[in-house]
Amino acid sequence: MKRTIWTAVLLLVIGMAGMVAGCGGSGTTPASSSATTPASSSAEEQPADDTYVEFTLKAKRNGDTIKLSGTTNLPDGALLAYSLEWAQDLTEGTLLVSDGRFEGSVSDVPSGPVEAWVAFQTILGAGKSQPQELIDRFGEMGENMTGPDVVTGGDLKRAEKVVTVD
Image (cartoon, rainbow, N blue to C red; front, top):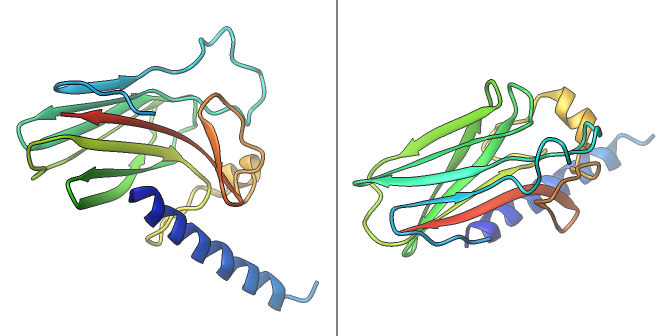
């Protein structure tokens, strides 16, 4: 469901960007109380390419709070989109990268399995945007992005991780 919502938002933004341009003329890892996805390769294996994206994701429950955290090779100021989905409810937002790390938490999450999705993408909804230097580096639609977790959805490329917390 969350990917459907993000895809719909992104398609709307893409369509609007196309109209504006035309006017110008010229994996899931289950766990009982926490879940982790490791980075897919070590620093020694990472290409020197500055379009390579890598990050880890940890999701841990403490009562009714889910804490998301991880590490990344993205620069300070990058934003990661996230969503938490449970039963038939969803919450989403962004996490700020600082010193190669990110973290955030969501409270009032009911008991039961929760799917946590975190992604780096160049297009964000809700009036948020990546710093221009990242859009220049990765491309307006993420078309220059590389790395083990890069996926394509429509015209947009993003690096994403998914874990499930019980």
